[in-house]
Image (tube, rainbow, N blue to C red; front, side, top):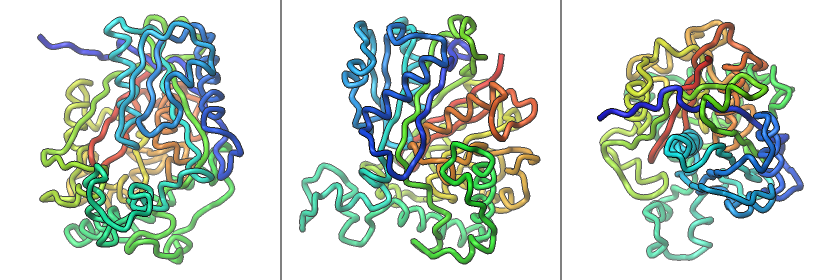
Length: 397
């Protein structure tokens, strides 16, 4: 028996806070604001919400959100991760709850003080060991990489970028083209943190190295803020005040060589330039009955420029090793074959662990993005790598 969830659920409401370097607020306050905005955007009131889904990295628990919103009848709650791999998977969990009859209107949220609070960019080593002088017994495989100086995700992705350059001839300018393209989209988006910060190729080249070959503008932002969406059945969503974004398909996936840990053990795979996004893409397109050529616009997870480049290959928009020339060709620009990250993405809008990509996907389907792709009817949204990944395809009615 084959079960399909194609177009059976939709995102009916979206909400976000201001994105900043210092919110001056608790994550619970940020999450509540985004959730109330999403509920109102869907034409609902808090009492209509009976399901909650959060990220495993989110400090705002389900009961915190239920209390803040005054929910009295939560019939379903769920959590998924890992970290940046979570957002599309969180939406998928909400779809499963709705289709299984466990909930009717599910609120999916992510909130963090990623600049003024816990800064992922400072490195996970000290955070995970608590400053201990020894490794072992910490419950994570990642700790065994710390003594060798591998402390932050940017160091690992720098190794991946260098490997891609050695194997395929990818250049720093190819990565720069990605950074500039998403910055241009952010410059058109009043809500983006980089709205007033244009970026040229010369500025990209002259920026300081953080972890060779990755420079300052190859790294995503550190942001305070929150995003939320409401997932419900397509039938219910059609009664809302805004055009629903139908969830054509959603998928999760892992690499053939599964490692333990959060990020660093992924370097032990036979290849480090193909990621779980490849398996996720195959599953997603199969479930959607679509292929890469059917996608009008994409919101691709971009914690680093190399992450986005790898996804272009893994999702089949270009052949393996051709991500650099594809990006530099103009294909990812507004007039190209695959406009990307039209709000600015993690690199230039905000880093809300990729949840902001889901919101921008909905805006493209509604037709009200600040960098609207004319006639867009399908939008791919991807979540992070390297351990596991998730993705979804949104479409119009």
